[in-house]
Image (tube, rainbow, N blue to C red; front, side):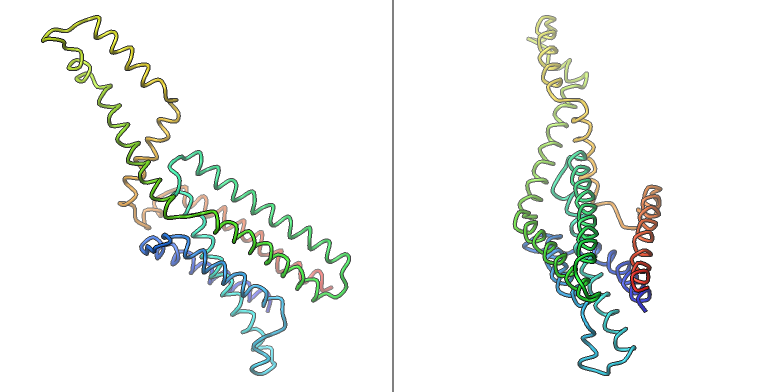
Length: 283
């Protein structure tokens, strides 16, 4: 029954993730497009995950049978995965909305992955500690669940308090327009026609003035690092063409299938031990 409950949760997660992504792309609120989903998902995940390690709630209201026990844990597992999909989609899609720099986007995604790893490691260390010193199999899991949910909820409150999607998104869009204007101006200044027209003095081409202006222009352009210029220009271009992108365009990307295959393999590696470890401890 445990493996089937996990399977139902994963199926619900797979269905909820694209739905949340599409709806959040097309639904804007006073708090932004992403953060409202995080608020709801945070409450759904934290509020229902604890019932996965509690005695059957449905059995108290209905018949105390294996069918109602399965329905109980399958229901709460599905709700947990829907809430997790809301948190995950909103959290990941928030990164490109608040930053133009690809370097900063990569840094934020790397930090997200690193802290996820640290969180998993912390839960495993707590589990090893609780299983070693606390008697009672059920109480070990329940205490571990309460501590994990409490720490996660505290971190979520910290994130919600410090991140304001609307002001950050507005500032990011304003910066994108400034970059676009700056690069269009630089490209105009570097064209041969502009040089020729800019260095005409009194109807004649003054060589000294032309050389001086060319030197000043080269210094101005050289102030910005070439790598940053290319990266910002690329980000600005992608920001201006994102409105033409549709979900089915992902199916034509080789990286989409590559990353999807790696992610699917990682989830299988994570979920199979989660089911089998319980069987191992019960023996």
